[in-house]
Length: 432
Image (cartoon, rainbow, N blue to C red; front, side, top):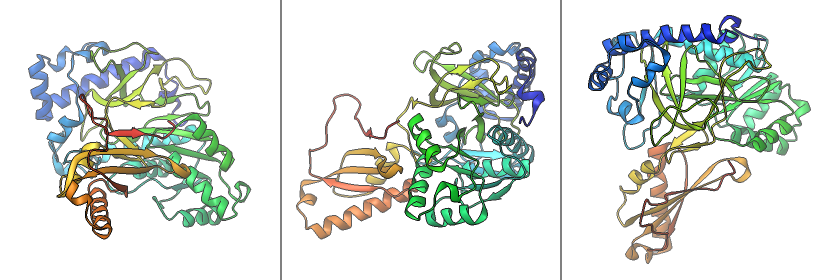
């Protein structure tokens, strides 16, 4: 089943014409309504009328997360604030988060692209969707929610946590679609096993997962445990949220909703645009967003693009699953975590050395973070009771900063490795 045949199966030449018209419109609107873009375009010597072909997008400057952060809170809005009906934010890294604003029209677009994507893996108005993605300032929960309601499906907005309750509701409510992060999905399966709940006791038809990196082995394990196919969902707050790209039944890459989001792949060192099938950093431009148009946003996500007609019938370009990042960000249980956030929390403590290491693991299929922190010689010689109090205080500071619980380990002075170059702050032991 295809939600929007006209767009999802459009001939490539026709799609390019539509993309060019929308690109010209969004560049003109950004230049005229967002002071940041007017300044950047003027500095680059570019006017909206210079965009005559799709390749001319390469004349435009990139937008980065730092640019959006400097515009905090509402500096990137292209409409009066009263026209913004909803705001979301990313997690703050070195202080302020990035803010994403939506008009009523933007919410309709978000609903539309997510409806297309959910339809790809079989969602209909008869389905019951259990949405375990967060419903706070993050975009995950809301994107799925809007798309599902647009289709006409029944949504259970349970959000994260309450794991045993999740299993109970899946069984009692007859959940047919489960939306999870892959690691949480595996944890749910484990708890279901502990509770004596078999896949045959459930009514699941399919699983939608995203918000963190994963391996094909993780997908297979998730599918085997729930006896349901699992499909990847991609999105990011700065562009829209989930709905930028999703998998079809082929499970062979994600179809990008390229009539709304124009994708490019660049070499992160040279900034050169790469050809299809070449791996590099994904760059996205919003073609239709009203409240907050974003031009050439550097996602830092590593992937590659592939064109052609899919066996599912769709002609939308495909991107491979994300296999890495060009920066030091970690995705832990769907939350973006930067070493700089950890460092900010640690700097609030006296007696702590500026040497630390972040270790990401995946015991029992659920992401965990350990932060090893060097103490001063004086502090390390204190009583165990005192050290336990300091450890708990650091853990609380870090929780206040990133919104996740971590395990802090205090280590002796000068025991963490030193580097003459860039310090190795992160060790990711998860199998990605």
